[in-house]
Amino acid sequence: MKKMSLKLTLLVCSFSISSHLFGQSLEEGVQLYKYNRFSSAKTILEPLAATTPLANYYLGLCELGLENKESAKSIFQKYPDDAANAAGLARVMILENKIPEANSMLTKVASKAKKKDYLPLQYAADAITYTEGGDPNVAIDWYKKAMEVQRTGDLHLGIGDAYRKIQGGGGNAMNNYEYAEEFAETKSAANYKMGNLWYSAKNYDSALVKYAKASSLDEKNPLPYNDLANAYYKINKFSIAKENIEKYLKLSDNSIDDQVNYANILYLSKDYAGAIQKMTELINKGAERPYMYRVLGFSQFELKDYGNALQNMDKLFAKQDSKKIIPQDYMYYGKILMTDTNKSAQAATYFEKGIALDTSIDKATIYRSVAENYKDAQKYTDAAKWYKRVVDGNTPSIEALDYWWCGVMYYYAKDYVNAEPMLTLMSQKYPEEPSSYYWLARTTVNAKDKDYKNGAATAYFKQWLGMVNDDPAKKNDLIKAYTYLSLTSFNLKNKADATMYNEKLLALDPANENGLGVQKALPGLK
Image (tube, rainbow, N blue to C red; front, side, top):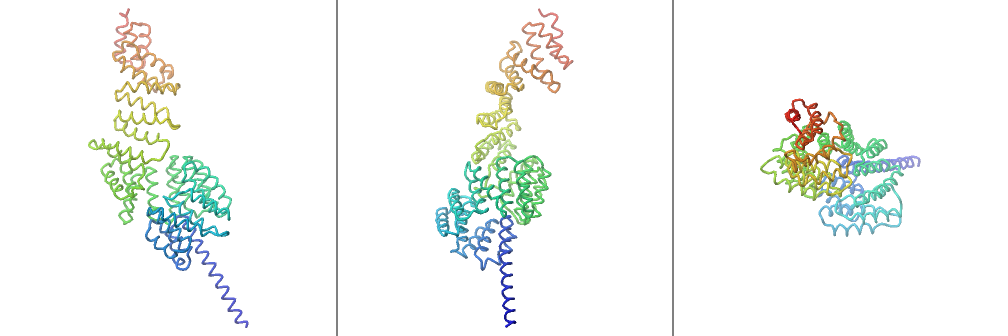
C-alpha cells in the first residue's frame, strides 16, 4: 500500500508540474505575441496548438502578424467551433474584404458569452479593433458588455485602442489606458499605449516619458524602444534614436520587419547611405517586402540619386497593396519628377494624390512641403500658389513665414499684383515683423516706381528702417533701402533728405555708383 501511495503521489506531482509548465509555456507564448515577437511565439505555441484551442488561436494571430494570411486561415479552421478561433477566422475575412460574412461570424462569437464568461465578447471585439475594415463602435459595445462581467486591464487596453480608431476618441482612449495602468499585468502596456497617444498628438516630450516608464515597468518589452527611437527622431535627437532602435533589436526577434524598422530609423536619422545598404542587403537575401522600395526611393532622392529613386518608387507602386500606399509616397514621387525637366509637369498630379490621401484636418504642413519643392526648383509661380493654399487654409499651424514666402514667391514670379495684398495682409497680422514692410517696399518699387521718381515705396522703407535700426546683419537690404530713398529724394528735389540718405548709403558702401553720382550732383540741386 505504501508503494502504491508513493506511485500515486509521484503521478499526481508529475501531472501538476506538467500542467504548470504547460500553462507557463502558453502564457509565455502569448506574452511574446503581445511583444510582436511573432516568430519566437510560434516556436512555443506550435507544439501546444494541436491540443489547445487557445494556443492555436494565438498561433494563428502570429501568422497574421507575419502577414501569412493563408497559413493563419488554415490554423484557425482547426477549431471552427471555438470562439477564439472563429474570431480569428473573422479577422481573415475582414482582410479578404468579406465584411458582411465577418460581421455575421463575430456576432455569433459574441453571442457565446455567458454570465461569467466574457471572453467571446473580447475575442469578437479584438477582431474588429486589430483588423482594418471593421466598425470600432461595435467593438466598443462588446468591450463594455464584457466589462459588465469583469473589468480587466486587457479589456481597457482593447477599448482604448478601439476609441483611437474613431475621430475625436483620443480622450476616451486615454481614460481607458489610465484604467489599464491600475492592473499589474498591463501597467507597462498601458504606459506604452499612452505614449503612442501622445506621439500621435505630436507631444513628443510626453510620449518619451510614457515610453520610458513602459520600459522600466517591463524590461523585456521591446516595443517602447522602437517608439522611443521614433520620438527622439521627432525632436531631432538622432543619435539617441539610433541607440534605442538598437536596444529594440536586441529584445525583439530581429526579424525581417525589425531590420526594416532599423533601416527606417537610419533613414529618419538622415543616414541615407546606411538605410540603402541595409534595405539592399535584405532584398538580396530574398527578404523582399514592397515597402522596402519606399525607403530606398526616399533615401536615394535625399542623396540626389534621382534615377535610382524613380526606379525604386516605380517598384513600390507596382508591388505594394494600394491600401498601404501612404501620402508621402506620392509626395516623394512628385519631388523626383520635378528633378527631370521632361517630367516636372506631371509632379502636380502626384502632389494632389498625396494630399487626397492625407487624412489630416490641417493640411498646412503638406501644402508647405509642396510649396518648398517648387521654391527650391525656382518655379516661383507654382510655389506662390501652394503657399497661398497654406494661408487660405486658415488653420492654427499657419505661421508668419507662410504669408512672407507667399508674397516673396509672387514677387520673384514678377506677379506684383498678388504679392502686394499678401504682404499687406502679413503686415496687418504680424505688425511687429519688419520683413513685410521691406518686401512691400520692393514690390511697390517694381510695380509703381521703377524709375525711382515718385517715392511710392518711401513710407514702407522708412517703416522698415525704423524697426531694424541699421542692423549690420541686414547690410545688403539697408543698401537697397538707402539707394531708393537717396535717389527718389534727389529726383523729388528734396535736398536735405537726399543728402541724409546718401550719406548713410556711402557709409555702408563707399564705392556705390548711385551714391557717388548723387553726391556729385547734390551741389547743383535746387
